[in-house]
Image 1: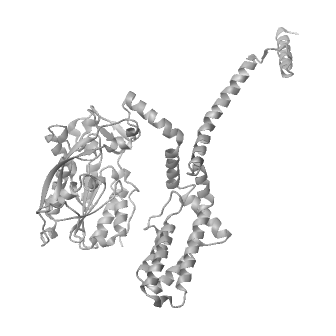
Image 2: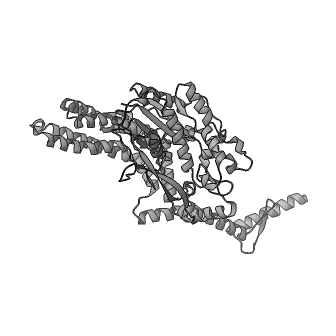
Image 3: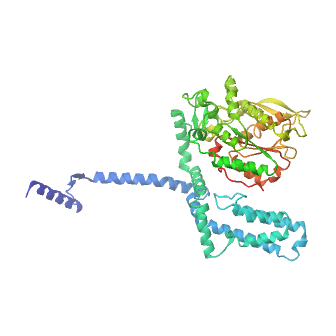
Length: 529
């Protein structure tokens, strides 16, 4: 036998002896590799440790959630997938049956206002329950699926017995309240697709809730954020550190560097459609796009940028040109702010706050001046109206920058607030009453986001750009504001309150530049009733 054959026989003999656990065999060589008890236990230990690291956080989370009676997050998903659709249908069906039974009582129609009030009090909770689909999804009142419920509520509020009976008849046959195996299975499948398993809105909300409630994340996140900030000046997923202590909002930077679409993009079409709806009511539209902070101060973001690029970073100016071509009246704050920033003398003269996404006094005053100049050009502006005189009062307010707040660094690091100069707008007179919106007398309605809220409804109050515009025009205004929701949410708010448009000649729609791409809830079509 050859030497190679003898060696193979020796390997097979040693391997056979090891398989039978012969005590005199401490180690053996098989297929050219050394196997020993030490290597086996190291592998077992490694696998066990890896398994524990994977399982322990979940066990810790479940134990904590059970201890705090908050419910187990993973079970929330399973419950919304299987049980919640049926529970909602049962509750809605019971509510409709109760209302029908009330309406069927003898003499109900003759019992007067008290009966209607009781019916409305029963209908409103039913309408609110119809909006809540599950733990993370709530329908907007303007959603098509809410239309039958809204029609029923409106019929009750109008005391229209025929429409109430028709609406209740439709609700009894509504897909949300069908009973039986086939309707239930169909409803469950639709729930998975639209509001649960395959719904991006639901899964993102569930993921966000799971992350926020994670005990491991709550324990480790502040430590990691603190270390990243101190070692690398990293502000996390929401913020970017700029030059000389300035901070910037990351979505605004992403908006500036990503390619812009075509003029027929949804934002522009939504604006044109809104203009048409207002025109049908004899109301003009004026669009005010507030430039991103990095658009006006690109050199504060990076030393590689030049101050000459001010107003030219991003695509906001191009979007204004497209709107002009579509016949929409706009205010060009890009050029105005580029001119204004050349007058900066010190940090307090800047248009924007250093550690915040919003503007300072100079920015909002220049904005109100530019808007007032355009408003005065509308033909109806010269019509007689009630004029009001205003005076200003200088003040200061301490503010915590929103970039650091959104980055959640304040949980572990103490940052000093920033003292900001403001000017409150007061009604001229002996009482010096602070400016307030007047929905009844105002000819102009403002729709806005947090740029319309800052200094206006938060400290020091009545010092925002809305108040300053009222002072420029010498007349009170009306406003609807939604933080981060000027693209769609504020129009939905207006659609729910159509009476606000009564007597208005102009709607000023203010939103920040980055909302062209990152507007909360997108740019939906909203129908004004």
